[in-house]
Image (cartoon, rainbow, N blue to C red; front, side, top):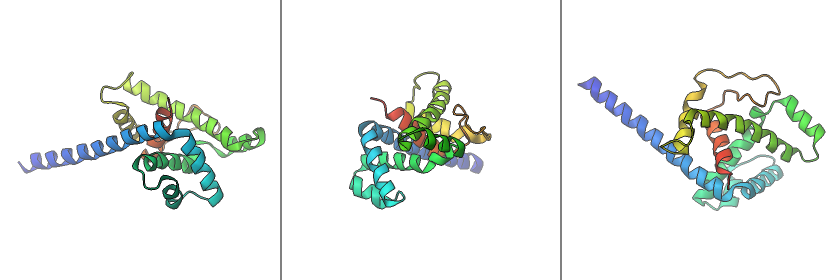
Length: 178
């Protein structure tokens, strides 16, 4: 009886955590869809001027608006993770071959996010019945049970990444569509 009760409690807690994550992801998807590109540009410029991204920069831009803060969370997570997504040799090539490094980096990141999004679509087998937020959570929570190692410069390879970076990349890629 105690084992059954413990399993029920653990299942309830896991379901509640999953529901909370899915709810957060759904809100972030909506926020990115509504605020996307302009907010990304504003935050990038503010972080660049300050030398780093901080909660104060997000607060100054979003004024504690829940949707803006959710979109900003995705954007700042992606800004901080850019070096993990794009190897040093590729970044150096972008600096040498582009007049606007940030724009070139965004194009390169978009390619890599697209590779991750293809994993999402293939795993979901089309439009998932429980929605994209649940599918994103499911993929990001389970994909790195095995290590994904990538060769330098391989834009089609998505390395092992933490749940937060996986979610932020997918929310940006999926949510930034009209």
